[in-house]
Length: 135
Image (tube, rainbow, N blue to C red; front, side, top):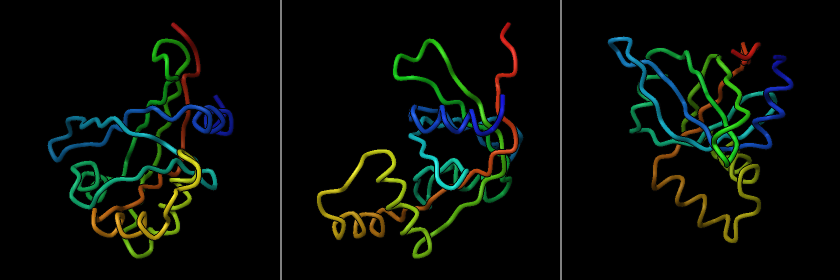
């Protein structure tokens, strides 16, 4: 599957599971909502989340995205993640919110919540997409 095709699927389907690696190599998986920005997969999280700790230690990430119906088409993308902290993450967090939920009724309140919750933006540069075949 071409990366551009996978990103198109992600732009239309938001439910996903992010897989990172624990220190001992076992996977750590988190249900997430994904967005797409400038060819990257984007995810909002908190500074204190295990996925953030894992990605700072080992930036390899895999994201499995599926439709709201769960069964049916899905896409897995793999790539290298970058964690962007505040204050640098604010514009990206706003763009992420707009891409997954539309306009916020009070952007000042949203910004304050992002600071209060110690939000970060995870950007995954996609290096591979699949499935390439069905079994």
